[in-house]
Image 1 (cartoon, rainbow, N blue to C red):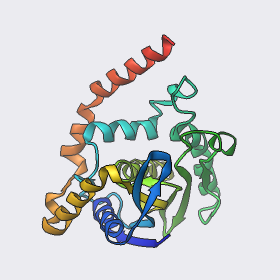
Image 2 (image 1 turned 90 degrees about the vertical axis):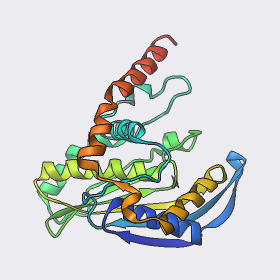
Image 3 (image 1 turned 45 degrees about the vertical axis):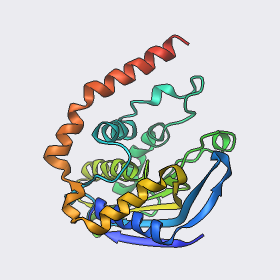
Image 4 (image 1 turned 135 degrees about the vertical axis):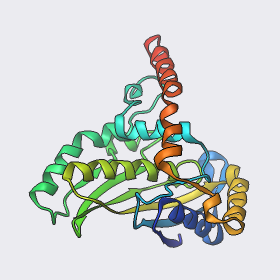
Length: 253
C-alpha cells in the first residue's frame, strides 16, 4: 500500500491536500465485505496550526448538525447509553478514552517530557469478534516546545464520510486537554493506515477535486468561531430530540 504524507497550517488546507493526494495516488482495491471497491492509501495528515481559522471545510458528507452531534459524541459521550443494546454499538470512542484523560493530564504534569501519555482504544477481547470494530486505535499526547501535540492513529478511515469530522472532534479534545494543562495547542497529526473512499462516494470525491483545483480556497471553507459555531450550537434541540428518541426506543426493547 502506498504511503502518502500531506501537511497544512489549517485543518481544511491539510484535509483538502489529503483528498487530492488520495485521488491522484491511491490504489483501487476490492472491498469484499461491502460488495464495493475503494480507492486507498496509507495517509499521514499534519496540521501545524489546528486552531487557526478557517477551521471548517465545505467538502465533507454532512453539515453543521452532524458535526455538532459528532463533537458531542466524542467529547461528551452523548451516545454512550447505546453500548450493548440490541444491534447498537459495542463501544463508543468516548467510553474507551474519557476515563483515561485525567491520567494523561497527571502524567504530563508529572513529566512534561513524557512519551507515555498514550490511550489505546482497541479492545482485542471485543474488536476481534465485533462486526464494527473500532477504527480509532490510539491517542498520543506530547508536550513539545511548551505546546500540546496530539498524534492520532486510525486503522481505517473513510475520507469523505468520517475523516474531517474525526479530525475536528479530536482537535477539540486536544484543545480541552491543553487548557487543563494551561499550555497552547501544538500540532495535530492524523494517521490512517487505510485512508479510503468507497465506490459509492467516488463521484462525490471527483466533484470535490474539481472544486479544490478550480475554486479559491476561501470559497470552500467557513470560519468556525462565530458563524459556523453558532449554527452548530443552534442544532442542539434537533440533536437532543434525536437522542431522546433513541433512548425511548432502547427503553422499550
